[in-house]
Length: 342
Image 1 (cartoon, helix red, strand yellow):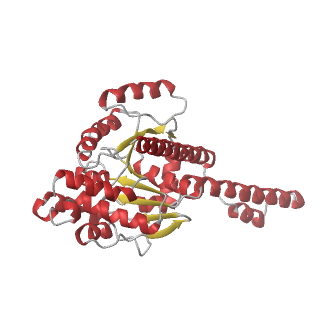
Image 2 (cartoon, rainbow, N blue to C red):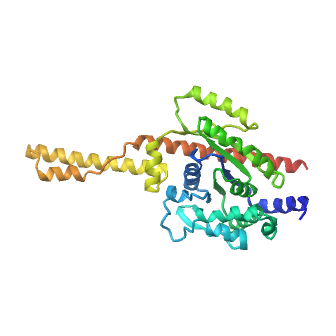
Image 3 (cartoon, rainbow, N blue to C red):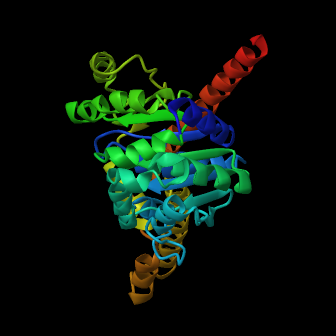
């Protein structure tokens, strides 16, 4: 297949991949998985049908969305089988209402082997790991009628990153306001440029700051200035995800999204207030603290200290989700206008 033929074939495939967002940075720990899970959950909660994909060897999306023990969690095996044999991607449906997931994990090691074996890659659909993955994803999106696809990309793994970018329309880059995050971002530009040779539709959606302190305005401006020096012009999202180590810990430990943690914390707070009020009433009636009263206090649910902060973080994810939808809508409007002019 010539380069022109490949581009034409991919353009046809991409008619079903108009809202696929690759969430990528060359460095780990910058919020890719958290953003994939929480923004996916926010968009699904607002009525969009969303597919999230885990294309990371760590497979940590299972922890954020709580499907670790689900029988459909094959740790990326179906992704490999879809690439090698054209089998359907296995989707775990309704991890949340309107939110489905294709799990990843250790099985994705095979993708690196496939990508490095050029003689085998030529036998794949479209002639490469990336094109075979794009074709499999297009079939899944069409069958599932998904409004949005968010893909969590592996850090430091160019083969998996290139595979995802070949199937994507948009690139979203999370980063922290430190040199480590900036270094991870440096590798994204050359990779995007290379993938664009076959996927010219690939477009930067923007950079989002993760783990940011709302009061650190000077840090924000400094980070924007630094990043402008290490990448081509990429717009920043107005939204950012604030720092909360406790929220990050609790959500992953409980397999909850930030808004779910906030909701449960508020419920626990109300229940504890009721229990403590009941204990105070018993004490007033008996004018002493007995065993029964101690039991009432012990039974009162503990309230996470992140109750308020998790709500703020949930609002951050909701704001980012709205901004993503708005930017994609603007891109689609621009593309429609360009098509009318032809």
